[in-house]
Image 1 (cartoon, rainbow, N blue to C red):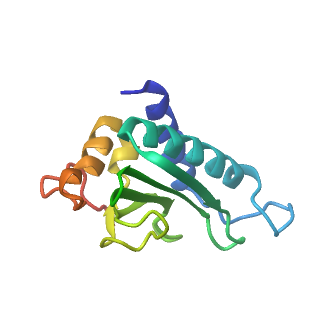
Image 2 (cartoon, rainbow, N blue to C red):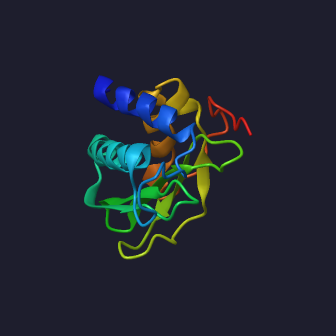
Length: 158
C-alpha cells in the first residue's frame, strides 16, 4: 500500500526495539526525545492505518506513561455499527523491547472491551510488511470477529 507507512513501521521498529524509558536529564513528567518521536510517529501511523482499513468514527489516543514505560498509542474505529476494531501499539517489555500490537473486535463504540485480546508481534514492523499487517487485522472482520490467522507469517520471537 503505502511506502510512507512502511517507513513509519521501520522507524517504529527502531524506536520500540530500544529503551524508551530513559530521560537523559530531561524532566520526568512527560515524553521527551525518542519517546516523543515514538508517540508522534505511532499516532500518525495508526491514523493512516484507520484510513487504509476503511474505518469510520475513528478515535486516536496516546498515553505517554511515566519514565518506567514507553507509553502506548491506541485507535478505535468502526466499519459499521457493532463491527469495529481496537488497536494498541506498545513496547512488549523492557527485557525484550520490540513493537507489539494488541487488537480486538469492537462491538460498542464507547468501549474497547468487546472482543478477546489478540497480538501481532514485531515481524510485520521488522520487515516493513504493511500489506501483511493489514491482512492480519482484516482477517474475519466480516463476521465481526478478529482472530489471529493460523497462517500468521511472523511468529512471536519471545
